Length: 231
View 1: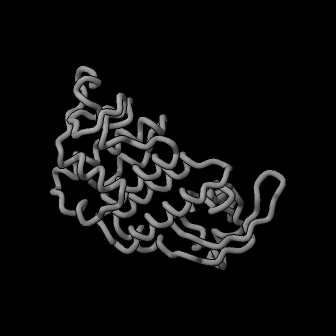
View 2: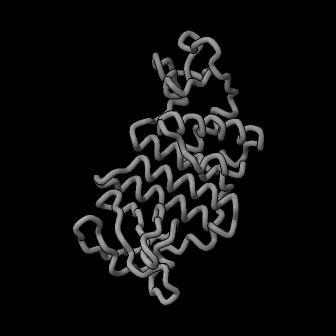
View 3: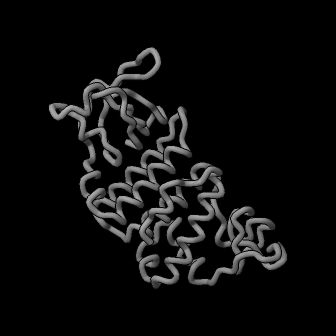
């Protein structure tokens, strides 16, 4: 469940990311009543098996069975909640009506990890963002120049050019990045959690700043929930 919107006195419009049918908006009737049988299963960050009937303008949710009750443990913790909010907003922006099983599985895995507190929320978020953007066609380069392809440890990061760039390709004023930050970014996109968690807080902060800038640039309108992330 990505987001919800009130409709009338008792209904709600739910935006869902599905495994095989992409993003769907559907009406859940009566879920805002206290007697609703499945209202809690249709809250953001929850994963459910949903039965939907095709309607004239909006589809209608007739049944929902919980598959992953991640919402409760996420919303009770501010860092997890803000990280999850950025995740679902990102998923909302990078997926449309066509199926995207990889984006679905990536989001479900990230929310599950957040709910279990497997890693620091900011690391989980940054790893998710890098992977989601890569699946959407904006894979950043960390081990070679994103402009000329020269392999090596380069020290400039340019969002507009797609990641790390060599000295010859770096424009004037390009952000400088140290080797530890580049290593952390590489660990986050490849899922090397043992190495990722060995970096210090300053390196994590620098990496987060670059990931945030990269994500907001490629998503054009930016991520409104990003400003609330507890870093």
